Image (cartoon, rainbow, N blue to C red; front, side, top):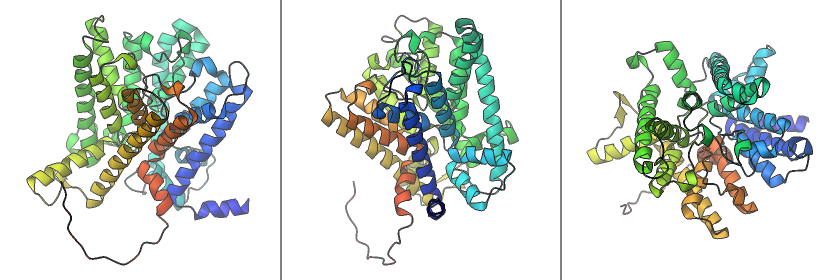
Length: 449
């Protein structure tokens, strides 16, 4: 036991976070395998249990078995627990227990919390975590109450409240798990496509969870005074709005003669807006993705790849990464030395990180798609939706997840893990303790472009 503690103390913050998520996934998978977790009381294949545990902990939402049809109450609650831990981060949950037990939180713990939540600084991190935990409880609680208004009338009091809590936590954590399998396997929220209460509540929870905790703090502190916001918040809010409403408009234009052909104006509006919100990070759906047009599928992939914002429950390369890359391209065209926005210059390291994250996620998603297509005869567009959904921890699927062979499942599991922990973080966890050579080699130009 002492040897294990010594080994853990030697790990860097990134290595601890990466290892912690792996342990949670493995323990969750072993528990889901047991007969006490399945609805029919039988053992679940390890590959399906591991896939589900990874998807829940990495708040993705891709599933090989229907959550309601396969798992019983214990299994569903276990999945819900992994979603909550995965959404907030196990380090944050650990701080919660330390606060409850009045234990001192050391400098190393503070550093890990800062790393886990993408906080800008360590100072005041404990107070920040306390605000996040309280805010999460309030937002998920209000969401659960609003959803219960609809579900209690449909399922009865206790079951309706349970459904409200489950879907509120799943939406806020951007997980995309649902319990609507009784209406048909993998049906998600298709039967609520015209329900204003369910749609608006789920969308609000997704957006609040996906904009990031630093943005919360800014909004609470400065209210509507945009000029007082951090640069981070000034970037996140406008970009989020453009992606949501721009995506909704494009979805409507692409599907008005297809998926929305027989819908009324209100239902078409809800479906378009819901598709734009959920595609970037959550994975719920109110329309059938498999029958969507090629243009909509491509739009899905683009929005999934972008994802939400840093320091949130969302995945993807993040909104700020896209803005940094766009600004860098603009500076190249304008031949300016520095990259600036809102009268602030960006550090050079931010550009390197943005490029590494975007290229890393793109490489992993395309590489996994190539691997899956090489092993199974599946439509390329559906496979790309699956792999970009996994690396971006979205959970959007064209319905081929349950047809995956073992190696395809393992490839998607790896993508979900990298997407939650962070592609760059996973890579650095293997390299950051290696010593780099002090030698600098002479420069030589190569042709580019």
